[in-house]
Length: 294
Ligand SMILES: [Mg+2]
Image (cartoon, rainbow, N blue to C red; front, side, top):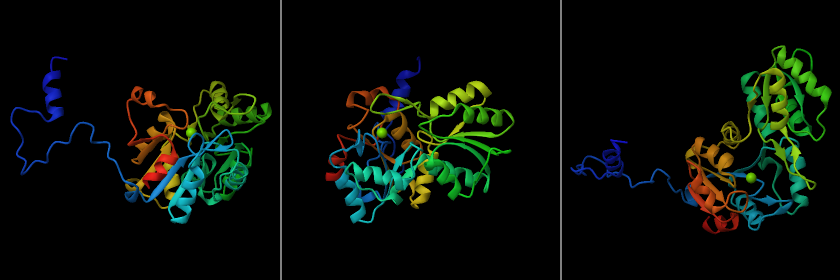
């Protein structure tokens, strides 16, 4: 604390002797590390789904138009979801049913990110999988062998019917040395009747029984964004991430070096932002407002 005065002066650039402006760049004003990138500078877009594009099976105003704009202008973009239940085709059909048309090739799930990750780490790996079509299809298409015999990995995803037998098998395989991966950390998912236990909750059960933590792929692991960017040949300097959660979308976007856009149409409200030790590059009320700026 004794040093706080000089530290503040240094930080503000308000030292007694002003720097030689011919040779030393003018000190950046406080907070200027958060660089605003205009719509033209951004070549590729990543966006969260729930709270940004859809809310309880209804499109958020501006979302259909934003997707259409990206399609019409041949922007490279991916809609990201931590949900590993559905294949992109199934998800595209469900979204179309609720009034939002997103091409299936523009959907990136934690199941796809998990499959890409394992393919990079161990091509042709043997995998014991707890999950639904979204995950099993992704693993199959990435060249994995799905088996309960001597697997290299146990991969846990979302299902609607967690089986005690399957969880028991997963626990025994992990105890015997299989590596443990979870598609996403979410403890609960939504349903009309109330919350549902999700991957993170079942992972906690398996961790308790085995003493082993999973490596978790979905947001907030920036791996989710890195794999998405690879998929569309995007680069962090010219890619933006739109999200409604500070603790997943924005922190992971920041850590992946992306331009981050927080929308206030989902979980985070304006007054919540200041409670986090990091902040987004840009805050908009919703994608309708963002669309006007593109
Ligand atoms: Mg969200």
